[in-house]
Every structure is written in C-alpha cells, then in structure tokens.
Amino acid sequence: MTTPPLAGPGGAGGSISSSQAHSRLAAVRARLDLPLVRRAAGLLDGRHRSLFSGHGQDFDEMALYSPGDDVGDIDWKASASTGHPVIRRFQRESNLAMVLAVDTGRNMAALAPDGGTKADIARFVADVVGYLARGRGDQLALVAGDSERVVQIPARGGTAHMEMLLRRIDAMFALDAPTSNITHVLDRVLTWFTRRSLVVVITDEVRPPLESEQTIKRLRTRHELMVIQVADALPTSFGDDAVEDVDSPLGIPEFLRARSDLAAEARDAVARRRSDVSAMLRRYGVQSVTVTSEADAVDRLMDLLRRSRRAGR
Image (cartoon, rainbow, N blue to C red; front, side, top):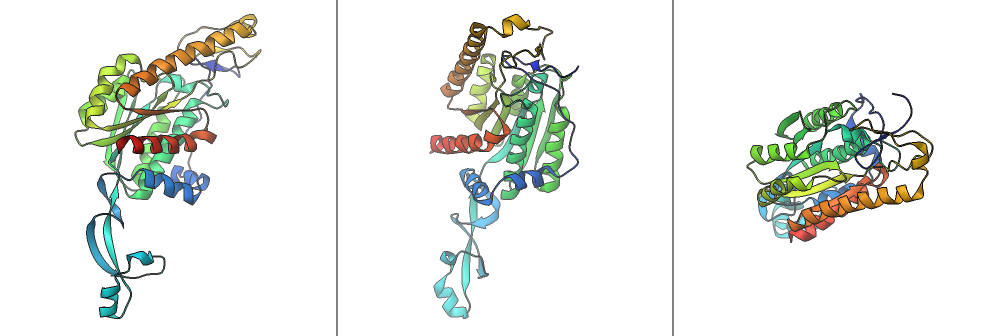
C-alpha cells in the first residue's frame, strides 16, 4: 500500500511505525514539564498507600530534616529535645491500583484529525499513564487486545516493568491486526481483577459500543473507570487523495469526496455515534474524553482526571 490515507470506522488512517529502541519513559519526561507532572500526580491521589512519604493520615516515622524537606513538617518540640531539626513523615494517600485497558484492533491504524495515526496517540497516552504511575511508585497492569487476541500483564511497579508493558502495547498495533473488540478486553478486566482498581480505557472515538453496556455497568460497580477515546479523521478530509477503509475495502470516489453535503453528513454521523456512546457512559458515571492529537493529549488527560476527581467526591 502506498501513500493514500486509510479510512477507519468514520475516519481515516495510515501505517503504524515499529517500536522505538529508546526509553519510552525518558521520552515522556522530556516532553512534560515538572509542574504539570506534579499536578497530574496530585489528581491521581486516591485510596491506597504509595511507596512515597507525604501528607497522609498514617504516621510513618521521625527523621532528621534534610534540605528540600517541607519546613511545615518540622516537629518543633522533638527538634528542641534533640537539638536538631526533626520532621514527621506520614504515609501519603495514593491512587487505586491502575489497569490500562487498550484497544489494539486495526481501527487504531486509521488517521487521527491531526494527520498522525490513532495508534501514535494511543501510545503516547499509555506512555504518560505509565510515566505517572512509575513516578508515584504505583503499580500498573495491562489488558490489551482485539477480536482475536488478549494480552494481560499483572500489576507491578518499577521502570523495567513499565517499559516492558508499554513496548508490548506498541508491538500489537498494526494495520493487519484483527478487528477491534474493546468489549472483549473489558470482559477480561472484569474477570481478572478482583481488587478495586482505576481502569484507564484507551480506544476508538465511538467505543465502547452500546453493546458493551452491561459490561460497563458491571465494571463500574467494582472499579473506578475512565475512557480516553482517540478521534478519527473524516474520510472527506483529504481532498483529492484516494481513501480506503481499514476494516473493509470500500473506496470513496473523488467526485463524492469533493461534495460538501457528503462531508456534512459524515460529520453528523460521527457526532451521533459519539453522542450515543457518551450518553451510555454518563448513565454509569463514567468520565470520558476525546483526544485528537498528541499535542492535546496531556491537556485532555488532565481535564479527565479533574472531572473524575470531582465526580468521586
């Protein structure tokens, strides 16, 4: 297949690049500024103990003050007794155990509105989640798959685990992958995880489908759930370029691509599907966000975390 773009379900797309040899976590760190990382980590604070110390409710230990420690943690009475500044350390409240549930169907080979592949955006979102989990000392599990495959990796922490998990996701994205079936992935999460977790779903813009409603309902009673949907480019967005569909060999003739009424109809159809899926998720209190590019991925993720935190109060 040559340069013409490929249309996905309601969109368009291209080929997927191979895995990179460099550290994925280091690449994310280079793109994110420290204040943003701290805000995101704060929004993830939740209900189990992290490996880090901080301002929680459970006392951990007394320790000598070191440059960089918060002066507000100094225990002045203990400091007067010892003759040295002493601080009180507490266990920090952290987030729930985290599970990445990733759609790796060939629909993710389609183009996003920014002209890049949806898989590239999905990769970046997964990288950011992995980076935040690693930085907080949290554990991260993976369930990724499509209509024919499901890969599951148990929750662990540490850099080596995060890198391995992210590369496993990367290797599953391909134009010749089986068709998408995010319900298959969510059913596996439902049967595999008994401990209450934060499940971060990365999928197509019109998924999870309405047929997933009972699975969503059951998942929501057991876990915290948020959905990140990667947008499709419209098949009419490429002017004179030939368009093909990643799921079926349906081409759109040039004279039809040029018609403004066809473009408007395509936009309306996508909007209706988005609305139906959003309404289904809202019924069960599931927060979701649609990402259109790597450039807006972090802002959209931050917005999702803020809304999820407010909803959980």
